[in-house]
Image 1 (cartoon, one colour):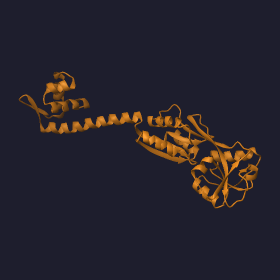
Image 2 (spheres, one colour):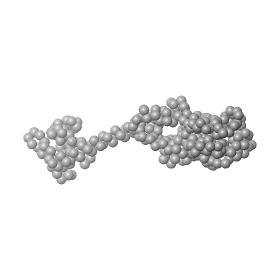
Image 3 (cartoon, one colour):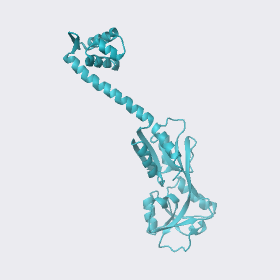
Length: 294
C-alpha cells in the first residue's frame, strides 16, 4: 500500500459511500472500488461491508483506518517541517566565533531570534584558523573570523577593521595615553594567541617592521585569563579594541599604539560553491543589513 491508497481508504470510511468518497477525492467510482479491492487482497482482510446504502467498517478496517490517519498526519507534518526549514522559518544556525569575540553578535542574534523564533543554534568558539577548518569540514556553516587567513575557497563579507591597544595593570605608571612599539618592547608581553596563528604572527610582524624584538614571556588564547594576568601585573599585552569593549576590568589601563599599521579585520565566511541552508542565508542577509555594527 502507498499513501495514496491510505487517503482513499480514509475517504471511504468517513464518507461511507464509494460515490461520496470518489466525489471528495475528485476521481471516478470504478478506480476507487478497484483500489479498495486491491488493499483487501494485499492485506487478506475484509475492510468494509455494505449495509443497505452505506458501508460499515470491519474491525480490520478500523485498525487500518487508525494507522492511516496517523500516517497521513505525519506526512503532512513532514511536508510542513521541510517547507519551514527550506523557508528558513525553522532550522539550525551553526556558526563559529573567534576567541576574541565580536561585540555586536549578541544583539544580532537577538534580532535574528525575534524574526525566526523557531530556529535553534549551535555557536562554537575557537581560533580563526580552526574555525576556517570547521567550515571547510561542514561542521559549521558560517564563521566570524579575524584576518589574515587564506580564504580562496570561501565567500567573505568584511565586517570591520579595528586597532590594537597596549594594556597593562594600573599599578604601572606610564604617564601618557599613547605608546610606541619602541616603548612596548621594554615590557614583558603576553601574546593573546598561540604561536602559528594569525594574531600571534601579526603582533610579531608589527614589531619586526619597526626592527624591534618584543619581550614575549607568555602566550594565552583565553581572553579572561589573559586579562586577569595583566590585571595582576604578571605581564602586559596587545589586544584588539573589541576585547576592551567586551571585557571590562577596572584594574587594567589601555594605551593607543602609535606609528603602526597594526589592525585587525573581522569577516564572516562560508564555503564557496556549496549548499548554504536558508537559515544561514537569512543570517547573512540580516548581518549585511546590520550596518556592520561590530
